[in-house]
Amino acid sequence: MAEMTYLQKIDAAAQAVERACGRAEIAVVLGSGLGDYADALENAKYIDYHDIPYFPVSTVPGHKGRWHTGTLHGKRVCMMQGRFHAYEGYDLNDVTLPVRVMQKLGVKTFVVTNAAGGVNLAFNAGDLMLITDFINLSGKNPLTGPNLDAFGPRFPDMSRAMDRDLIKQTLATAAKLGIPLQQGVYAWLNGPTFETPAEIRMTRTLGADAVGMSTVPEIIVARHGGMRVLGVSCITNMAAGVVDQPLNHEEVMEMGNRVKDTFRKLLDGVIETM
Ligand code: HPA
Image 1 (cartoon, rainbow, N blue to C red):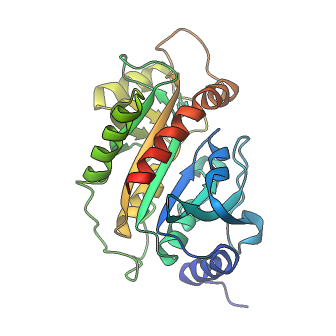
Image 2 (cartoon, rainbow, N blue to C red):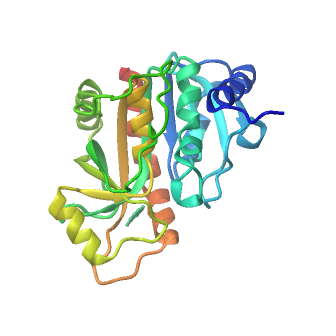
């Protein structure tokens, strides 16, 4: 059989997800340690990534690999338990295939979460940070290649990548619930190495408040598709060189785990306002 085109892969994956779980208006990508939040969905159905044609399978501990759709605060919400990263060796078309599937399934609001290293010296490990903007330091862009005209324009605007109304709603929700919330710029570096102290000083000079290895490709594709985007990072650790101490993934997961109940409360409060 001839090689499937990317559009055919999107269609095949979207059909499998729709058959198993139905459509949705809001999508949430659950980052490291946040996967449990999928329990909050009522009347939920799920499909494992390995049963979705052309879907990659996540290889990172703490990322489960299941798509859930159900009802939350009266809205149809899908949640991805586990995401894909460029450092796993996936092409950015594969990393962002789920976002294209969401667009096919009717998603208009895209909520993305992640674990990130704190660059801003006023932050502390365990803080939550509302993403107000991003810097793409990966040298890659998921929209490289022929434009998918059916999904969005060749040259998408990124001047308001993060939705201003959702930012306001999230700040108001955090204030109402008494949840401290930092705000800042997320810089995407490829990984899988944690950064060097010199790279972290560079990102600080460039205006970053946090660094991580995900999220930006998904935001770019969601914006290409005209979705409203909200992003929240869990600052699981201060980035390299801030404290004189090596970094490891166990520490990232442990802090994610400690903060997840607060993270969940914040997300839940915001989704209620959507
Ligand atoms: N750097 C990059 N990605 C991360 C970090 C970090 O320090 N912590 C969690 N994800």
